[in-house]
Length: 286
Image (cartoon, rainbow, N blue to C red):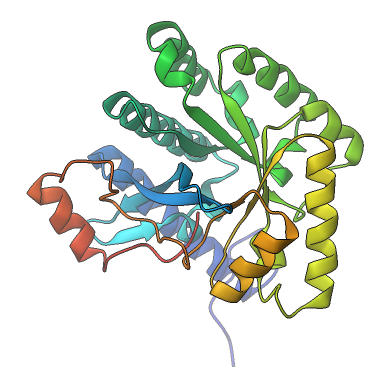
């Protein structure tokens, strides 16, 4: 039986199917950005000592042509290495800075790729904010994944040093999932370390995860970095992590990403309708 032709350069029908899926994802993201259909969902990061919210993370979402909310996990893999990924970083940064400007008591983190350090538009947005809104920028936290930081460690270190002088804090996202060496970790001097959610899963009952968590907490303490446990989904996990000395907790057990955070006035009706068509709170942390 003869199958469908496989596109030249692809080794199998599976690769062809993946390529076709990615093309559809790229088209959807481009169309959403052209319409201006990108928003941030806000998830709290809580102090483990019960002191309340340490900061919020602004998670990028796009809306398809029907208004359905598309979380980052459904498109970031397809766009990360492309110019489109940099455009998404630009939108996330703009939206994050806008939220900080509107709410002087807010401290907010947004995700970025190390590739955006060399992207002129993204850097222009950030540098313009440091000049025009210095007080706003001092409440901004930029999150860089461990894998992304290791793509160009020297460039990232120079960038971090420049922006730290402006008051920006830096968080190393998904710590433990990538290949950061201790040498680079020391020289990066991140302010916050967010420990990958894979280590959090059932940590209260998993001896292997407990050993890994204790080691990562100890390493972060040595370098004077605030620790955040990602993807906390049960009270048992939260209790174990608090007893182990974690600094902050983030996850569905403590608060899902929402479009209407408590520090924001009620949004316009069309924004509520958009969020409603998307089925409520987005169900992932990115």
